[in-house]
Amino acid sequence: MLKLVFRLALLFLGASALLALVNVAVGDNATFTVQPSKTHVITLSLRESDSVSGSFSVVSDDDTGVNFFITDPYNNTVLRYDNVLQKSFSFTATTDGDYKLHFDNSVSTVFSKAVSLNYSTIHYIMGMPQEQFWFIVIAAVALIGVMLYVVLMPK
Image 1: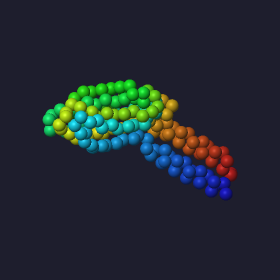
Image 2: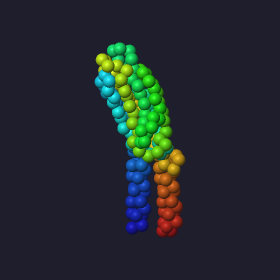
Image 3: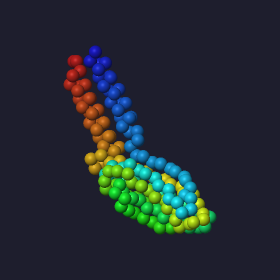
Image 4: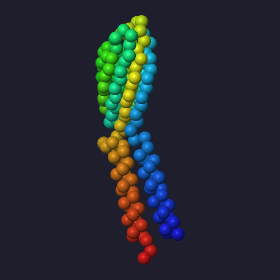
């Protein structure tokens, strides 16, 4: 009976390890069109210390770009680039909440802009990347499980 309990515990630990490694870094790709004199907004729900990095490129018939800026949950501008056709960016969330990526096509009143965006988000727990945190937790739990198995195993 005790062997069955330990086997089930090890199976649970293995399944937990696999589940913990799912969704450790969130990435996304998007392609969209920003109409003339309009703004396209993408909202990211972040926690304090989460970091986001990405890049985008703009295709336009009039060779003008878009005004790109990011706002925090209090509507403060985190960073801003005007009239850009291509840009890499990164920032770290300073508070929990919704951060917004704005793609503003007020540069053009006639031409639409096709935008291709790629970005990734790394979540942090207790000051370390989420995947590193979960690795340490799972390793500690597995070590405790092995120690219990060795101590409680009938001799």
